Image 1 (cartoon, rainbow, N blue to C red):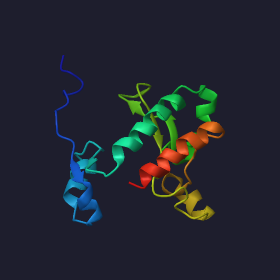
Image 2: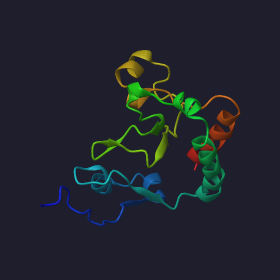
Image 3: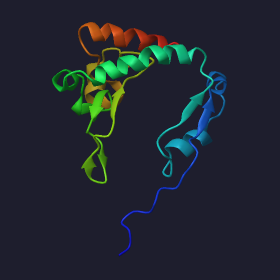
Image 4: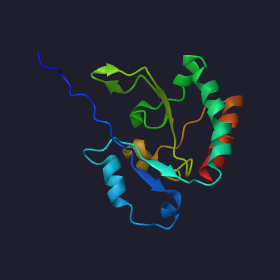
Length: 153
């Protein structure tokens, strides 16, 4: 009997240098490699100044969030945006089954409200324009400050 799936092929993750982003270099071929039809859906930005200390502050908070009760984390999900904002765990499928092997917390690092309150735009395109979702209470401040600092890199 033939296997259902071919074994994955090892590939390098496409990399963009931070200075090329800042210089507004033409990065279309690297972006196509990362997110095009044959892409893996990921790319790396290298050489981000000040990233390591900010990441070191943020990663322990990710652990704290992931260990909150499920009912608290569920308040940070957004089904109408197809879980592309806030908390997502078990919402993606792997070979037709929910993927519980990882959890992700998605946000727009540039702004908390890309639509600037435009409710029609938010309703029409929630995956792109819905404001970021943050946990409430003490963890809200703990998570938000490092993310703002990280976005400032």
